[in-house]
Image (cartoon, rainbow, N blue to C red):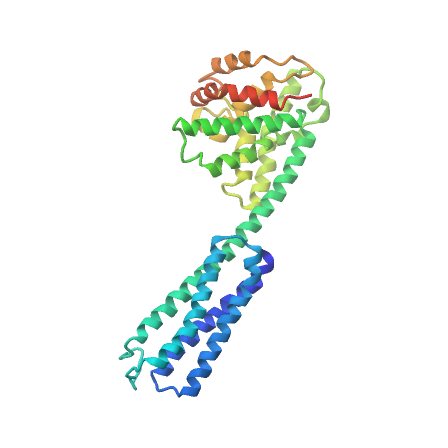
Length: 353
């Protein structure tokens, strides 16, 4: 959209000039404007209105938005008024007040209709242009966020000791859980379609903090000892720090990076307060992190590792159900039990090879 900003600025300037000239036209008519002058001014207004419509054409070709279509219609209306106004003047004889004084006495009869029309058109056109500039800023911010998200995803995948399919599986589990929670009537405000899509995009960054874990621990072929495990646990705090920097740079208050920040720092917390890194309890744990926690544990249970065989789906279901109210949010376990068939299907569809 960036390449149409200049044409939009020109459109804004031309429309403002047309508005001023339209208003001036009514004032001058009220003071016995000569016919030649009237038609000269009408012609200038018409040319500027046509010019504004032509300047909008690049935007019409490249932007598919209701705002740009609305602006097109408004500019066409402005052009229509530029044609209609002098034509009406040919057929309607109006008594002209010789003392048209804006602040002390106005007697211009039906011309008030045109003054109101000019004002409404001008306000609507400017509002549309402002909305288009706002849309452009939003698109630029989204492009920056997408670029950073892609970089962070690449970084997370490069350092993750899991497989790429783990990321695909967990983000699909997260989406299923969120949709089921909402269907059950829980967290409807927090789980709008937009927010669920953001959660889906944020989920792959849950273990980005592993960028700070030494290779000999991250890629160890076997179980970690106590000292190594303490180092591994720091990945939650490291992930928060990484994403906090990205969030600050993007000024991302409630977007993907913000949700990823909550997930990375909280997906190893437990409902009963025995998790890490902060021992948060119950609803102190952000909802995105609680959702991610269950999805991550299910995937860890059913997936095969060098130090363990994968559990059966039913054993994993039983284990998660047994941790209802201790490790996991009870409502999330209920949602998981409703969605367990979909979890199994996702696990089979994206199984590691």
